[in-house]
Structures are given as C-alpha cells and as structure tokens.
Image 1 (cartoon, rainbow, N blue to C red):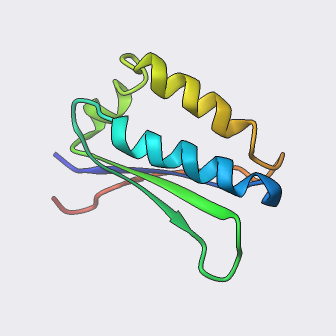
Image 2 (cartoon, rainbow, N blue to C red):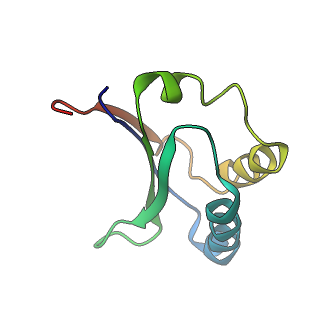
Image 3 (tube, rainbow, N blue to C red):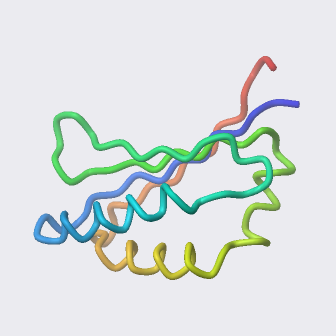
Length: 100
C-alpha cells in the first residue's frame, strides 16, 4: 500500500516563537498513532516563523483513521498551537506515494 504524507504549513506570531517551540517539543515527544511512521516539524529556511508539520503514514487507512484516536494531551497542545498561528496562513497538503 502507498504511504501518505500530510503536511500543515503556517506562520506564527513572531513574539510567540518561544511558546511555539515549547509546544512543538512536547508534541514531538507524545505524538503517536497506529500507522504513523514519523512526525517532523520544519521551519522555512528564508522565512522566519513559518513552519511545516509533516506526518508520514504507512497507508491511507492509517491516515484516515488518525482523527479517531487523538490523545487528550495532543488535542490540548494542538489547540494551544493554533492560537499562535497568524490567520489565513495555514495550508494543508495530502500526498499519496506513487510507487510503493
């Protein structure tokens, strides 16, 4: 089965950078789900405070079922994180592996 990559790109309020990095550090340590191979957060090289969260799933079923079993702490941190994002900067992308 083909892997699925889901990403979320956004910019954050510059003054909230330290808070953002603290939240992301905790998220990276607790984000776990069946079929999730990796969760990585990148910052855009030439644009400070623009980040992209990348989730790599083993297959489409794992990706589609990912919302069903969200840990309560992950949900709380995700909500806190969304409060730091500048409005109308969020972009979502879902990619499906062509050749597995």
